[in-house]
Length: 188
Image (cartoon, rainbow, N blue to C red):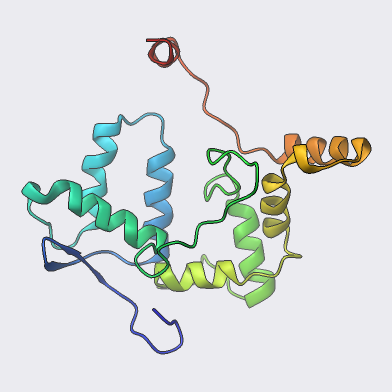
């Protein structure tokens, strides 16, 4: 899909049929926030994901319907193999949290695009992501993401490694605390 001339999608395909979905960036930020909500079980999250459909797909195609939403959210249909990989970096290390980094995203859009995201009536999720991807590296949000993605093992200079580690510790995305039940699940 080319943002310059292609129509932005407002449907996803499930079992060969197009189903309308919500496309505003706020809806998809809520989608990601819902995924991070530790108060919801995996089952609850899966069922809530169906709320992003305007036209409800058949429950017989539930897995395909959920995969279609994730494909829309990540733009994987348009960019199948465009995943950021950082050499030696664990794939579980997150460089961005829409919730935790919200102020930095908001400030970047305001300073770079003179766009107050609170005042924008409607913006398609893919357009929002395109603008986000194009933010200059000098913006604080992109700098935070850059520091989070640094593989400390690749830094030879001990002082530089210590400096980067301190920055990473300061801007680390908080991980949820585990309760006794979750800890027990890890061990069997």
